[in-house]
Length: 358
Image (cartoon, rainbow, N blue to C red):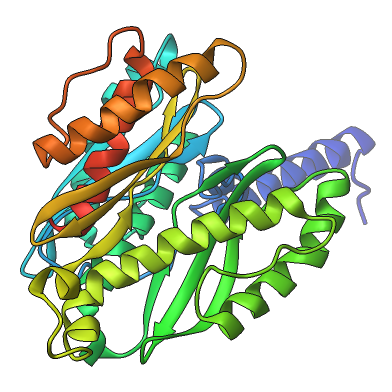
């Protein structure tokens, strides 16, 4: 039998190896999981953000403004127009700006607005290249949907979930979400709480106690947890904001059946807290009391403080409060020398009016 030449065997072996590699490559799946992940399927969350309550659709008519969501590049805040239980318009009250953010915002925000109207929920895809803006948009959108749903659910529809405004504390933001059924708080949870360093331990110890206290008391008149003064104060502030929204939504049904001899004003009066407006010098938040369709009282829950801001706040806030009551809307003049505080006041005031249906 004739022997194969060694060189010939080597050539044949090499050819077989190459053929095998080509065959393996031809069987490679069309989609590469690593490539899919690199395409941006996973999105880094905004600090303190919880997963959206998917499928929660708007249930009221009118305009509602979500809470401002703080992102790495600036605040994002969404306002919705709702008609017939559906979102008919979505717009951004705030979005990151300055430098490259201007270009990203100009590209992403219209797409996010369109997606919100199309999806009728906060379950929308992030815009490529605008991860943080998209995440903040979805968070504020969910907040607006919570408010719209609470406003439209009424007492007859049973349980409703409402998210309070973000309360800024010295150690970080605090935000409370409550579930209300039969006029009582059945569940309270912290959507945001201070974190990092010693704050983790304080939050872990205090928040469960505050949640229990809120359910037990049924209101925001709860005791601060020892060693968690700032967290407790922020919790109570956000809890009161959530309760204000519930009261605004159900005031007609819950208050009208009480005192038959009570005046119309007494039955219709309700208190609403606007979203926090972030300004260059600090947050501004407005609370109003509405009766008979008119603003009877306006007050600043938060205003810039520290250094010269104390003097500016002391001078401007009383004037802004008076102007809000006199005008009955957010179309009020800025106070001279307090441009940023005035702008933030008007923004939060409009948010409160949106919730009150004014």
